[in-house]
Image (tube, rainbow, N blue to C red; front, side, top):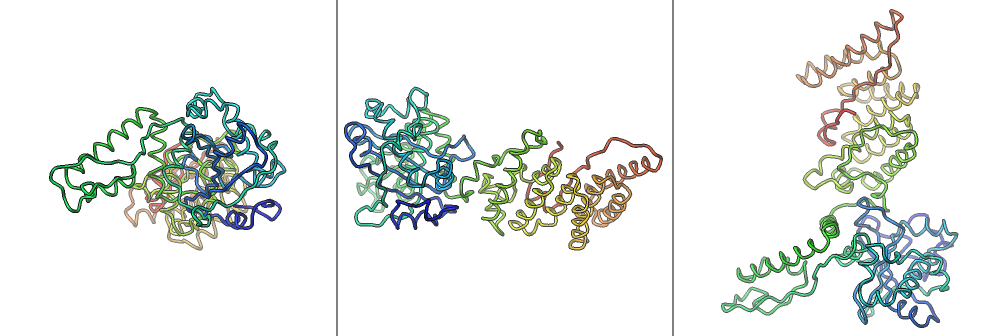
Length: 487
C-alpha cells in the first residue's frame, strides 16, 4: 500500500499494520479482517455480526466498469446472512487523505455504512433480495453513507484468525469474484453446491465418483473429471453444462464478467488499480484528444510509466496485464503503440519521453523504436533543441536502424527543416533498397518526395500548410505492437 506512514495506520494492530504496509501487489490476494463496534443494539447489532471485511490487491472488474473506492453486497439470508465488504489496497490511503482520516477510520466508515444501510432495509437483506434491488437502483449502495458509518464510533479491527491459524494474504477465488460481479451487475444464479453423481452398475476402481465422492463446483469437479469413468464423466459434463447455462440465462452480463475474471485470475495484472486508468486492450484511440481531454491523456501516460515499472524486461507479461488475449501476448495493444506519437501530436513531448524510457525498460529490444518515436514527439511539441539532441543520440546509438533514420527525417519535417529531413530520407532509402524491404522503400520514397516539395517551396518563397509526417514503426515494433492505422 503506497504512501503509508505510522499516522495513517494508527489504531490498527501491529500485525495488521505489517500486512498492509507491504501487500503482495503483483499477486491476486485478499486479507480478511475482523471488525466490531462495541455497544450496538437491535438491527445494527445484527447487521454488524454479519459483516466480513476484506482488503484486496486485485479488482477483477477494473477496466470493465467504473470502480468506486470500495464494494459491498450481501450473501445468503436469515441465519446464513453475510455482508461482505471489499476495500482495494490502493484506495485506502487516498480515501483517508481526502477525508482527513486514517486507514482504520476509512474501514470503520465504509463497513459501518454497510451496517447502517443494511439495518434500514433489514427485511430485504434477510430475505436475500438486497443485491437484486440494489442492481435495479431500488435501494442504495451499501457503502453510500460513510458519514453514518463514522457515527457508529471507533471500530475494533483485528487480523482474523481461523482455527488458530494466523491471518495471512490468501488467494482471491471464485467467491470473491462472484461478490464483486454481484455488486456491479447484480446476482448471477451460479449453483456452487457440491456435486454428487449418480451411482452406476459397473464401478471403476480409479473413478472418484464411483467411490462415492462429492465434488466442489466448479473447480474440484473439473479437476476430477479426467480420472472419472466414461459414464460419470458424461454426468459431470451434463452438470457443468446445466449450471453454466442457468448462470448465463440469469444474468448474461454478470456471467460474462465472472467468466472473464475467472480466466484472468491466472494471468499477470496491473497492480494498484492501474487498469482503471488505462484503456482496454482493444482500444485504438487514434483521435488526437481535444484540449479539454489533455488531462486524461497526461494521466494515461503517467499510468503507463507507473505500470511499466512493475514489468521490467517482461514485455509479454505486460501485454497480458494490459488485457491482451493470451494468443496475442506477443503484441501490445494498439493504443499503447500509438501513445508516444499521440502525446507528441498533443504537445506533450516531455510525457512522451518518459513513456518511451519506461517502455524501453519493459522491452529493451524495442528501445530504438521508442526513441525514434520520441524524437518525432519532441519535435511536434515544439521542443526543437531536445528533438535535435534526441535525433543525434539515436543515430549515434543505432546508426544502421532504418526507422531511426526515417523518424529523424520525420522530426525535422515537424521542425520545418525539409532539406535536413531529405538527407535522412535519402540514407534511409538506400538502406531499404539494400535490404529489399519493398514496403519500407515505398514509405521512404513518399516521405522524400514530400520533403523535396517542401524544400522547393521554401526556396521559391512559397509557404504551404504544414504536413504531419506519416509515421511508420520498425519491423520489430510492428511485430510486437501490431499495425498502426491512419488517424
